[in-house]
Image (cartoon, rainbow, N blue to C red; front, side, top):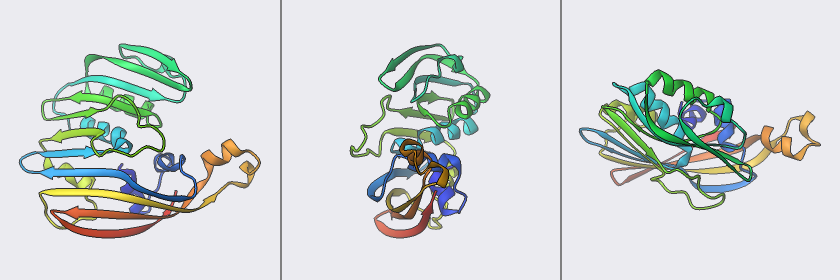
Length: 227
């Protein structure tokens, strides 16, 4: 599920927590960027946080086998877990598999998404009725996010609802961005003396400001953050 949707619906999961574990206290602007253009097809552009979710939407929506290439990136050694043709490498703490272009079923793609749900799927996927292209390198930490890290197209415009869960108005163009205001880190008592573990396990508390621009009309919404 869209991790922003999870939070706004009070269903924060381990996957949602994963999106926030890199953040300390502070304000973080222009996060989780989304641009939607709707006509006969739906065009979706997002920042890197939605790459895995978009892969999932392709897997659910595809009406044919899927052409796959691109990369899988993780901060753990996963070489023995991947049964696709690939070139595997390690640089510093980053492990990477560059996927040789090949064809897979949607069921196989769902298996890959589940297996690497806590890692980064920077894939290029193409089916008869939908496609996705992600850049193949993660943005630099602390750098400015781009809203075109991922670009997808769907013939089924109902996919819009996955991003517009709180939008009732119809639109042609919608731009969404978020501000994270993190005021506190709630650290489990058993991890208080282990800085590295505390950073990973701490819950981030504060709020999310959601800014929507519907065909030029700006709407702001807020929701408590505890994830």
